[in-house]
Image 1 (cartoon, rainbow, N blue to C red):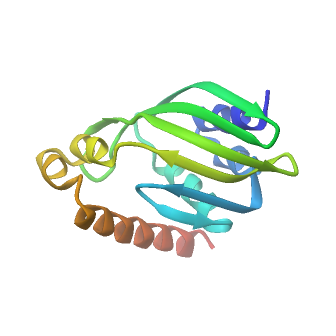
Image 2 (image 1 turned 60 degrees about the vertical axis):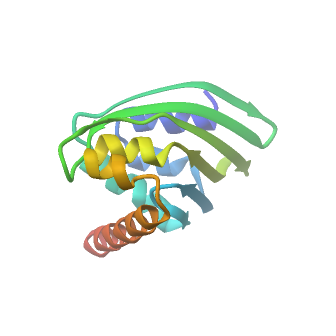
Length: 152
């Protein structure tokens, strides 16, 4: 099993410790919902998401790893904690590997589609706007800050 498969297998079990063991200390993570997170903040995000996951399942496929570059397709399904609404996200990921660990992880998904599922009509209406993304990034940053402050 390669490092990307190890990462998603741990995620299926909501085992943030094993997920984070797949990450290099200098990890750079990016996605539309959290923006760019580096090092411990990226690892704390996965810990927070695993800890707060409700009614969670994860399918992953199309994992490739050639040299230090990799890709994967993954689809989490869960109840969004703020609204209780069911979300099925469709995500394509790219990876860079250094010293056998993931040093760069970028997730790409349709934020407008996600917002419509997670937030209902407000998400459908505003989810595709820059305003919405800016507000979401501020919220996720604050949520991660609170989580990290408690976890210390």
